[in-house]
Image (cartoon, rainbow, N blue to C red; front, side, top):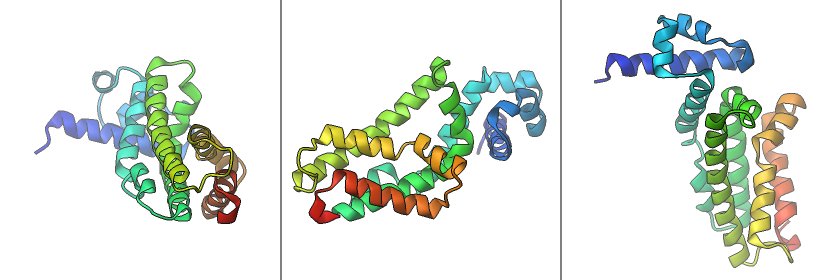
Length: 198
């Protein structure tokens, strides 16, 4: 059975996530979050010492809930290179779609706040590790294009699958998420795979 503190913590995450899903994070105040959760601002600060701490917690929470759709590790569960890259594209689309409303705050604050930077870097390193494992598997199977080493391939996959690219194409460019997923697969395939596998 959850404690009152845990229930309040859960409610704060849900309220904050709902608010940043409706409008940009910088327009959401701690006072609004506290009011929406039915607690005082001081009580909110007892849970989260700053707005950035709250946003990092929201991103972590959304990440845990939705990573099960297609987990980062699952992209390496396929034998054929196309299946692996298709799973990676599906995972990126699903992940960014759910994470972007809260995750955009990490993009904007990561260069100015140590808490946000640490959370962003940890998430990026986890993604990079999975992409490196994928690139190493492609290399071992003779699927990487000639002259492309696994480290460089992982960097290229990581760049193509970044939230910044999702933001540029889907959020700013108005792309349909399914089109983003399909084109991400096609571009990644052409960038990293040996031509006969295109």
